[in-house]
Length: 599
Ligand SMILES: [Zn+2]
Image (cartoon, rainbow, N blue to C red; front, side):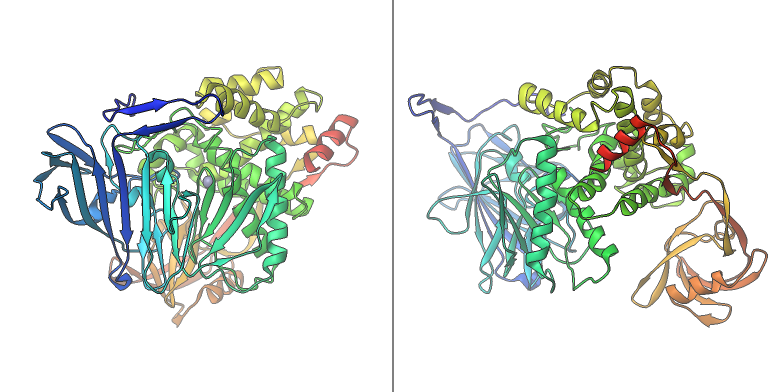
């Protein structure tokens, strides 16, 4: 962790209390110009202008990760044509002293650095440029001088000549087009910029605070209706916490893909919808946007102590991502329901999906929520990808399930006077607003137990251990039941999930100890033929539906660039359904808890 920041540049601080406004001026300045004249090369060109630097040499660093995506991305590897000079153009010598640090010799009070940033793929956590848009993830584009993370930064964007729009949560500089200012690097690194010809949807305000949605190629659908629904989501979340902590908020749609990243006053989301007609698809979009929006509270402000100030050199590890991510999944479900955008059945089904995903993976026997949070840096954001995937769980699955138990327990213990909402509000007030810091594991638990008025050791055991979860006990507090009796799923069981890419049927997951697993089939193998015929994802599913346990299939697969033929006997799939339903004849407290929970 970066513990202290020694400020080498001199800040002359002059406070003008009379107007309530304080103004400060500093001697040194840092500004960047980022241009994209040849988008087809996929390279941004960056010029950094650093004035009044001190010392014989200066260390410039590129972060190794971007907060919100808990994996090393080593952005320094994308820097090319690095060149340093003084104001008169005289070249300064430099050498790399670590994977992400450039040491530049210094003999004057100014430095002009220029370099290219090569981009390779459109993804929410990495910079990307092509002929249609530029996506600037600041951690992957802008250097910071070591120890000067608190330095203000000015960014000038020079869009490709055919483009006119820049979307970002950064403040603009009045009278200067495409010029943005960040009071420090933490704010800069938290504010991606999307450049292109973008579409802006009708905006809305809540308590006078504007909320915008700006997107690259969002697709064709009813944007008025969509923004009305989004307003309900945002309003529900702001009412839950009781405060709107930003001056403006921007949803930035970066085009097709998967995933989103949360920021203090914006979120970047992979977003492309074409008249999706099924309620299920819309619901998925609403859950996703509610999740990213709620993160502006949970993780950006209500946060584990390790997640700020960030360690840009090593990454910031915490054992509480199950709170930051898992409880954000819990609240995405709750917010969409409370906003009136899904039914009771759809809400219960959302939690059922979380439970199924967790219970059907063998990793639940090996990894706790705290371990999953801490080890994500080696596992990748959605679990491990190799064979040891079976030893891990995802806090996106177990987190919301434990969130539900915690909420029902608090409601039960307080005779429905308090809930998990009170925990979130208390964390926001006590830690974000008053102490201005994150909370430790002990402090998180203390807040929960203070609100519950009792020990929550039983629930927290599900956080720190792999103990079998007793869902029935906690759902009963709300008069709900859950079906945990194992049932045989009809059809023959091979134990694979598939997805289609470029007409190939790729195996996306293999159940542990399934016939497929035992036959040596693994993730990313490609199915060429089944019983002598070419297949697609749909026809494969139908084949298994019409088979029975004990039936033999012939499979031709591609494994490590080799064709392999296998004969496999199908098995019997036994699964606990985890259907959640209302119990008949609830008592008054159960009735009250369920009603207020569903609101
Ligand atoms: Zn998230």
